Structure formats: structure tokens, C-alpha cells
Length: 268
Image 1 (cartoon, rainbow, N blue to C red):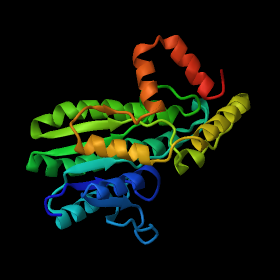
Image 2: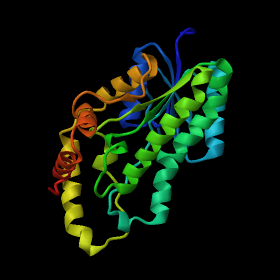
Image 3: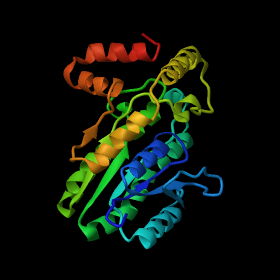
């Protein structure tokens, strides 16, 4: 085990983060998984749980130092913790937008900044950021979530240029609908504007239907492990719908892509 990669995965309580942690253990890695409350978290065989709230700077610093104290190094950081929000952009309060960005963007930034000094010192490392197909596509009634993932994409590409001279690379994983509680139990904006209600209801049901028939997180987890341990490339899309959407966005005219997206969200 002493020669295995030391991996930190944020947000391993459930969903994609939990599945990724399990996959890294199967690869022989030493895995630290972060949760907000270790007392309430379900144990994961082979994973060392670390209490860390990515929304809190002191908590992040303490969590990363805990890993360093135990493992002496960090080879891989997987930023998988995230939240979503359903509602029209006009209905979204600034406070709601700030709360979402505090996890999806600034939480990722906090953990990355805490890990980078150690990776720079050892002159190696891989940072894998969980984005989404909504990091390169629009998402009706998920505007702030989509905006946060677009921000993650821009930050990740920029950071990769800044740190590659230190032997560190940054990669993105861009899944589509995945059967997790993130979208099944998506919180909605507190404000309601009647003009949007009918279409929002249609979109909400379309999302539920797509999530219900979506694949389990294992496929995304496999892609995360490949992005972390395999040959570097910037973008990794899981097989299936995500990979197809990436190709459509790149090669098809904007009109048909937009039409297909509206159909997916039930507003064609």
C-alpha cells in the first residue's frame, strides 16, 4: 500500500463521489473521502473518512492537513461534491445563487488551493473536477447550476496551464443525467413567478423521467478513475449520452442542438 496513490474524493456520502471512492479502492489506492459529519456518515470499506465542509475555509484546511499527517502526500484530488437548484433564473435569489456557487465553485476552489502547495512541493499531482454536460450546454430552469459548471470548466482549463510546470495536471469529467439523489431531490427556488409555473412543471417532470432511466453512478466513477490515473487529457465524458452530447455540441449546427435540448427538457 505504501506505493499506492493517495486519493482524496470530496462528497462521498452518496452518489458519484461514493461510487468513485469505491472504484479507487478497487484500484489499490489509499482513499480519503470527505463528509460533512463523520458521525452520521455510512462507512465505506477501504475508505478513510475525513470530516470536512468544503464551504468552510478552516474546515478544508484542517481536513487536508489531516490527510497529509496520515499519508504524507496527496497524489489525486477529486472534487465531486456539488449541489443543484431548479427554478427560473428570474426566480432565483442572489442568496440562493451564492449558496450554490459556494459549493460548486468556491468549495472546489478552497480544496484545490489547500492541496496545491503539497502537490507543488512533490512536483506531481492530478486534480479531477466533476463538471457536467451542463458545463458546455444551457439548461432551462437550471440556469445557476449550469452557470456554476461553466465556471468550473473555465477555471479548470486555466488552472491546468498554470500548474503543469510543476508536474500537476487538471482534468474535467462531464456526466449527463445520472441516477443519484442530486437531481431526484433537487431543491427548488423559494420564489415563484406564475408566468413560469407551467413550463417549470414540465421541465421538472422531464428531469425526473430522465434521471429515473439514467445509468447508476458506476459509469461516471469509472471515468473519474481513468481521468485521475490514466494518461492525461482535459475532458472525459462517460460513455453513452454524455459522450454523444459532447460530439453534437462540437460538430452539429447550433439550431439542431438547441432543438434537441429543448425536447430533452420537455419544452420542444
